[in-house]
Length: 399
Image 1 (cartoon, rainbow, N blue to C red):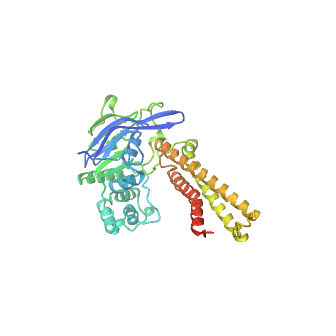
Image 2: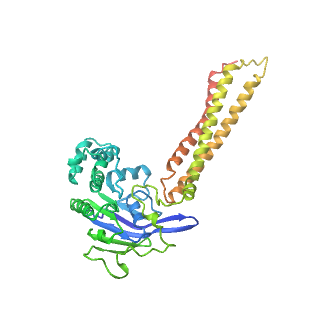
Image 3: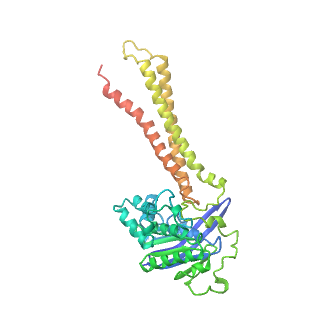
């Protein structure tokens, strides 16, 4: 059974008023232990493909099976667990923590996986990339090649099934890049599935299999040869992709570490994407604040103007401040209830839109906070009057 399998994988991006097909019904199968290079011109969809294979984004349509499990519709928490335990990432810019040692950088994925014996496992990972002797050096004390080897050790410390690398030699000289590719070949022999994205034909030929993409589709899938293929399927990166049907250069060149999709989105597009999430959170926050204020006002007034004991023989109105406080509390409860409902409804709508737009994780925290606070506001607005009624019934003495 293939480790990676996609069926009709499609990803649509909304860019202004137009819809861009970054991936257009991609079918691919990658066996365990394979070493695959995905290449193509800028805007061909190769980085979008990498985002989806790494569970960093969701497909608009189609299925993605990782080790036989369909991950297309998993929850955010489940996807995070898969990224941590089954997928390793290597970034072009290394993405190391500068103020910690190489060993501590490698330990980071184990910390999130809540594993024991992290130090021993991190040292073994550094040994696999030939860098155990530099374990206690900070990244600024290492060369570019050594930093990339630390990044590879960090990616394999949890023994992932697949290692994804986005332009792993982009910031390295040719000699150091060859050493990094040699490490990838060794890992592939050890059973790790390697998938790299590169725009350089010479780098792609170092893999055992080359997948060429153009306009969101696979146009060639063949074993790597000593020379680039000829004709229309040549591994050219200089050919510009049609602007109307491909993702912009900056959109597909985003590093794997960016969970949101294309990083070249304008500030206006990003603002539109999270506007609903922020609106829902704002409604929920105002609802909670109104309820809290209403309760505080009620407690203060009740302390200053105690409500007289009700006497049926001599009915009398409570003091005016108590009446006003009661009306204010009632208005606060009703307004809080309405705003809480609006906050939840807007947050649910924002979550639905975010799933269909680039950068699903942008604004996801706002959505979650809006849902939680809005739910609390609804529960409080309904529960406080009910609690008061129940308490009055329990404490009322028979006349």
